[in-house]
Length: 160
Image (cartoon, rainbow, N blue to C red):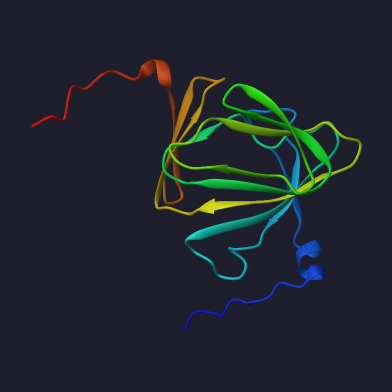
């Protein structure tokens, strides 16, 4: 029998599980965070707790083809780059990215941590684009492949 997951994460457990990571393609990326949903056994829904230090950025400007995503700001202030525009965001602001989503990214412009919840779907297959880099990611379960968009060739129509 599979080990049972806890249904409740206490604040101290969340604090103890925080890890710092960054996106390898963005030298300004630095996030401290933890998986909340996965830790309590959620499989179809991702919920994560994150903190961005002052002057740092989340991942990298990206869009999703299949998985919806959302962000809810708990404290701090920042700039959300969404579909080529910049928007000031702060405590209580919510952002949602239905699919296919527009590209988005978050950076901390304040002098305190930008603290937020983020989440979305966990599908078996996801396609994400990185418009500033001209790259596309294909994830099938835990396998990730990266392609240059310039290598894409039209294949023809699927009209029958």
